[in-house]
Image (tube, rainbow, N blue to C red; front, side, top):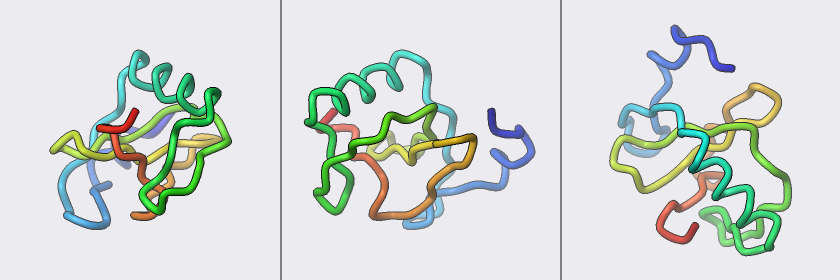
Length: 84
């Protein structure tokens, strides 16, 4: 799990908006899409590795995946939430 102090300083690398932890239902929905092969990142590449968690941008448009307790804060790796 992400340290709350780290979460306070993390922001979207693109817009600098705040991010918050995704709820379990959203993570499960994304992992189901990954299992079906329908989840794609911003580059349009298929996401094949399940995620443990995620950070949702304040506007709700993108999720930055968390794998092995490390948030992947790369713009191209973000998952568009309107397609999940």
